[in-house]
Image (tube, rainbow, N blue to C red):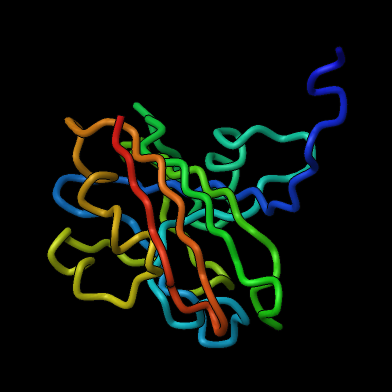
Length: 169
């Protein structure tokens, strides 16, 4: 008997983000109001994983492209699956997001068309407009003693959160 001969094909956008820690602050990006997705939201620096690129390489590349800096002592802190409503006309694809955290290594913080780069304390960060998955996981992601978060966020119409499941290993 043949088993697993035809794999399921997932329609996923792969994304890799990098939270960079420098002393007591975290580098974040306030997305431009001109952006179609999450305008004005504060998110880690990151972006889509290019074809045939691994998530860690993508996170490092995005950090350098968008912020002009590098990170060291990088750790994977979360893998988030966002399941979008197939009928939503804006957010149509599911996302798999790899969340990395690293320490500021060096480089001159630049500017980006993506939005405004900000160094925020953890308390300041929690006061910002954050995506559901970031808000739910920020304490785990930024805690060096916490394990890796595996999370699934399911959205309904207009990108409204209807269910979440989080497991820390």
